[in-house]
Amino acid sequence: MRRAVFLDRDGTMIEERGYLNRLDLVTPFPYTADAIGRLRRAGFAVVVVTNQAGIARGFFDEAFVRSVHAHLNTLLQADAIPDAYYFCPHHPEGVVESYRVECRCRKPAPGMIEQAVADLDLDVARSFVVGDKWLDIGLANQAGARGILVRTGYGADTADAPPPGLRAERVVATLHDAADYIIQASETGDHAHP
Image (cartoon, rainbow, N blue to C red; front, side):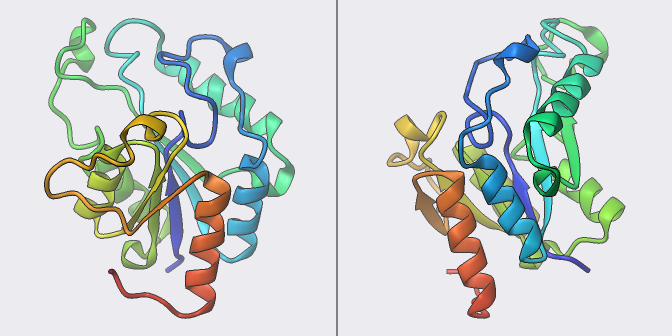
């Protein structure tokens, strides 16, 4: 079973655009490809897990989200393409009836990670979640992984105000710094939760 790094997409890998609805708005941070490449070379599967409530809200469809991920892959170097992408199209207040549900895949619920573990034979207890929102830390806590919050995207404004009961293992500036921390922790054999 492989270790994994589960990455949030918007605000963590690429610039936050609200409901991203055009391919020309997909802008990876300058360090994204390097960070993913280093994690993969260190033996981690890199799996993107992203809430895409814009589908339930009628702003775009699932095919568009898949096209965003295909386009993002073209912007990353060959060794920096994530192993898999998972997205949640649901929202309990969605306007598209088929997506207006309480689901198990919308973060912080662990459904996307559970599916990735089943599909890719991953060891979640030795894995990390990296994101710019506290719900990403909530996802890590629910799934049994280690949570790292980045100060990009929404993290710039919320990193210092954790909701009650949530604690990140580490708060870092960017995905680049998260990769540094994860790789160092794996090399030193630091497998313990804080």
